[in-house]
Length: 143
Image 1 (cartoon, helix red, strand yellow):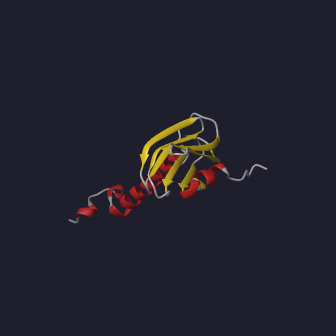
Image 2 (cartoon, helix red, strand yellow):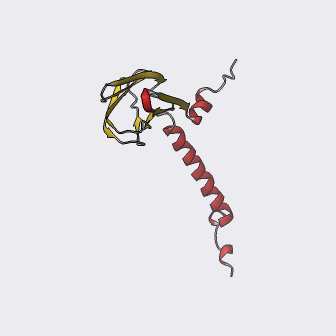
Image 3 (cartoon, helix red, strand yellow):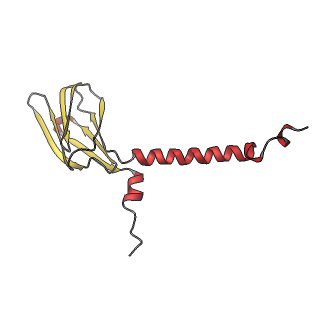
């Protein structure tokens, strides 16, 4: 007797594999959507020199990093508390260097990339998570 004839229909490969794949896709999509609401700031040191200390402040939150080497980066994940506003960066260089600009919210899927270049130049890129753009900015169809 063939073993596949003894198995119920829900335990056969042609049903089981597609079902598991579909459930895996749904679970991965839900996890991606839930995590897409957090905002992050990534700072890259492209100055050609190490930075002894750098402070990044945004939305009422501050992070201080000691000794940031050349071509190194660090990521800040903003907590839910805080008000939207500008990003401020300050280094412990001689002379001290300060920069303020950009806009970030604690929620909403903001991805801020900041590159520190020589001579105090700053390059800022802002992206919003694809999931947040799709569902937060969806057109209102009730009108």
